Image (tube, rainbow, N blue to C red):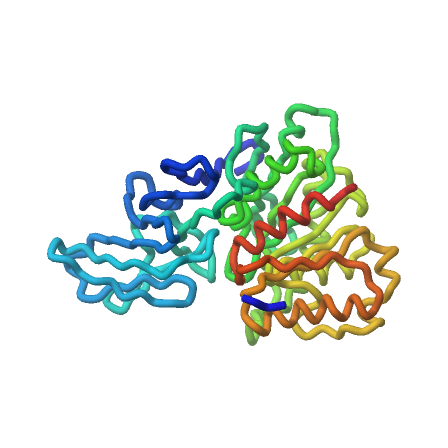
Length: 381
């Protein structure tokens, strides 16, 4: 219950947590610069109690605050002209944040930039004690590539981030299953590779023998068909155009370009938040294409779908190898209740599925990292 590029370009994303004076993964014993800082930036720092210290040199500013996890922290200006504040303890994992300087929202110049909440913002990684499944290890590494393809449906060039397992290079005759992995609303195709640390998670699982080597394709989850009339109103859950692009272009493109096993038993679709709703809708609409469906903090056919035997018949038990849904225990009440209620409804309808609650996390990347870490080993076995 609620308790709380082109093919061939390699992009390296790694998070290495400093463990000063302590051999336990993710444990810090003195203030430590965040690994998400730009090179050479000392702040923000993470304290052993997981509070964060922000310090910025803005001598001409009259007011500065840091906005993180829905809370604003007013900063205090010192005699040296530098602004500083210490937050409350933060939940481990990755968090977006911004600054407000004299009434204007800006990014922290000390932080790398991440696309989330519909704009580029700052981010901070808070170490998680005893956990290393999403950290870079000394194991064989796959590749994350930016792949472009021409879309006739949209009249544009679309970009996808693609993970190739280590075996893709070492076993050139081998073909692989594919997971189509979606981002959430306000994010883009870069999210799983950067904030989600998808590459590290998959490298580690495969090296441990816990997961089948697979290709992962991260598409941008929006599309506008060429020549279509502009929408009169924005409907977040109207992704008909994107569904058409996925089915008619994205899947065929990657089956033709990569060494995939091109059948529904070796093709999965999954996503976080809005990407979870997209995955359930597209996956359930196209059982000929997808045999495995997952949703992290988002599952079902939109936010108000019917949960009856017509929408979710027991025949799904024969049609799909896996239906997976997850939620963080500290997600917004309505979001948590919606996913939990879907779980209860599927149980009552006799529809087999796997349900997971991420303890102590909200609508954030640690919930989704944990979910991918559990979901991926279930696939293609």
